Image 1: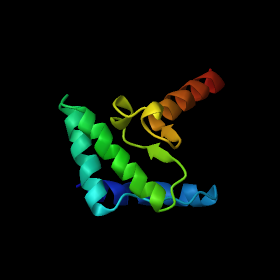
Image 2: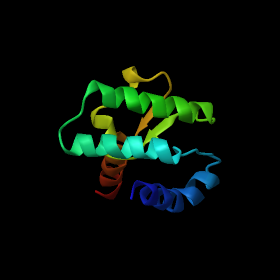
Image 3: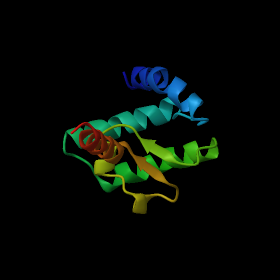
Image 4: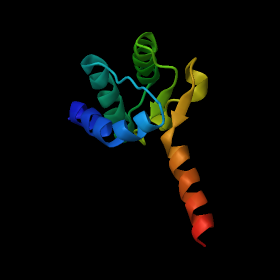
Length: 109
């Protein structure tokens, strides 16, 4: 299921990211499983320090594969992963969504 989520995300975002000149990498299957389990832990209210450590390993793998920043496209991940936890830029999509909604609201009022 998490792999399907990645494939869906790729289909949705691929064109827009390419138009912006942004290349992206996604976690390998093993790392996708780690992220998926962490998301389920967050949803279940059972997050632990080891979840942040596991996510950091996934981030290191992405960095090795060329990532310059990490997009937290799942709404749950920013609940436990903070910029101070990692040594590369995090893009918090929750924050971006709320900023765009506020901007849209101001422009349509």
